[in-house]
Image 1 (cartoon, rainbow, N blue to C red):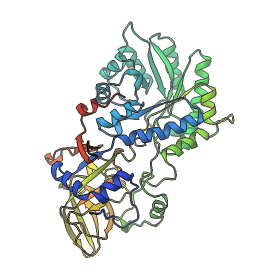
Image 2 (image 1 turned 45 degrees about the vertical axis):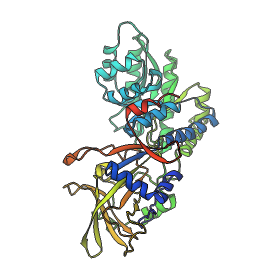
Image 3 (image 1 turned 90 degrees about the vertical axis):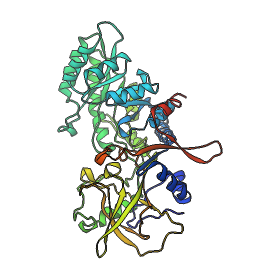
Image 4 (image 1 turned 180 degrees about the vertical axis):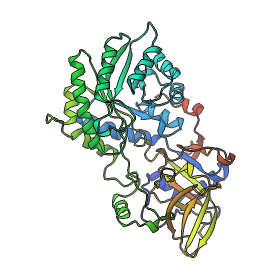
Length: 461
């Protein structure tokens, strides 16, 4: 059985193991969906270790001290959390529940940073209890945190979240004047230690991070003049990954027309699915960028004795998951137009809910071998709900072999936000199954549950 890709030229980049599963193990995939339902999310946790190693190699090349935290918000998989801890990464937690999962998997305070802007008092308290690093979003949060501090105990380390001037309208972080206000408050509070600055910017350009580091450097100098000893600048996340071939992606952007979408509209923006840089190349470009004094960012960090912190999410989940949908029905809605209904919802793999598109072609895995020869068909993908907005792809896709009920459509590389950011039990459909693909003692592919209990067995080296 072979995987068949629709026309359109936005074929996914696949890790070899995924390609082998889709091209050579179709019956196995069909069996897994039969047993576990549609959609099913399949995870390869070891890919996180590979992605982390690529970033660490760049940092070692430049001699930059670093602290990499896996952004837990990117995926609900406990086994990915476990893989991050086993590979020597920390965990970035933005909620009490992400924090508790990380703790249950064995993470101690030195491995945790809390970056969410809306932390509750209970979240603050549990972070303080294990002496996790806390990124403070505002002077108001700093006051809330101080109220939670015990009268006696370890000094609590904090980062202050900067809102750079190129993100002045952003609701996260604080401008330089508020940073100074917080520093004055910390100076009078012996239970707090200022560890450095943090920012997390929208977009995926390294250039905006370089500009923000320049602003942070000035505040670092000012804080040292006031007697503080900051040790870190944390650049947040936003490292890009490459879903599709760069040339194919550029060709699509340049040639797409409103009629290429069933809505008659080209979305206003897209994630850079076929960007020029891998996460590692992006990081290398950032480290080579010049500061105002002519030093590279790498040399600045080394010479100033600063740790570069970061919280990649999507970049560490690159190639770590696929989402598999079973075709329910193919309905003709015009002379050359079809809607392909899948068992599942657009909540499980799409960008349409954000007014955009997941610009990666799904791969068709036919249930019958050899597949029934048909004329090519043109269609868009819809979920099984009663909502007209439940659409996985508004982009018209041309399938050289027409999908049939029982076939599978596979979206590759859905580990970064796609597969579970919006999942729910609408219409009382159960949550999609999430399983890890492993090899048994005979080297055959098999599935294990992706649960906290299973992950606990693997959380420590």
